[in-house]
Image 1 (spheres, rainbow, N blue to C red):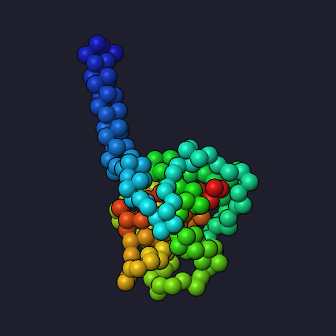
Image 2: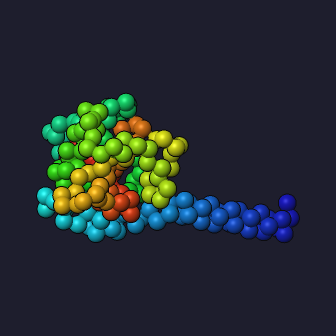
Image 3: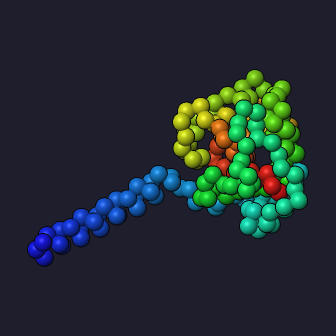
Length: 179
């Protein structure tokens, strides 16, 4: 191989690497933004609790394990594993009381307070990991004083993962049921 060919191959490899890096950045579509907006999106909840990541509080190994939603497969034997490390997480105990109530209804399979609870969540905002249509389902979290469904939701995935949004899909936190 001549030096000119080596230079061409080197340039081609560098361009491919840059294109791959740019593609990863574009596919993440601001994956860091949920971490940056954790405090803003959860703010002061109805119970006055604030969202904190598991790294700040650490897991509570003595906490009871919750059941995955009806019709899903349980988490691996090792316990909860985040589906996307780029998403911030929130302990179940740090969610508003109404969100915990909704999670209980999901575990029992209903009945739900709103007709549209359990419908397919399309993930049009691409804030959750990309999955096939029908993978995610959304449930309303009652907002005290709201005349409608409000902005708070729990979204579940087909393998049992659960996500919290306080700002109508603007940002998501993955729910860690261990704490």
